[in-house]
Image (cartoon, rainbow, N blue to C red; front, side):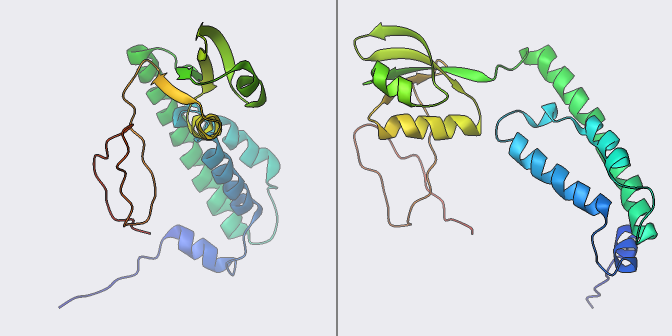
Length: 196
């Protein structure tokens, strides 16, 4: 016999009490989620300032308003959530810095088949030094910004010799199922079906 139960949480009850209309606190939570999603593309997640979000929650959302049950449930839940997240991120950041040191915001890359004109017109690339006729050591922002910048350089014919001291670089691509790479510059390691 299979039984299905729907758990009624305090959050569900408060949402029901507001006729599913978002409160100021709901809107604030949406904005924080958006800021966090944008942030983790360019910096480590543990650097996001959840503690300041607690202050913003209490200063930006009014104490009184429509749907008071939902307002106060969200206010208390989000305060607890952001406080726990802030402590967790603080702990992870401390442990990471103890183990690896502070994380730089840029990474070095050795590139070839480049020239000063390409470097000048490609945003977010900082020249460190020239090491050959068409070879340079450059600084490029890390994380998601690296992907866009590297793609912009590659579209101009620039070749990556090393990234952060690594001469073997793993690249993942989304492609039709029938596509296979057979070129001389790389080796396809594996493929997996796309789930969405």
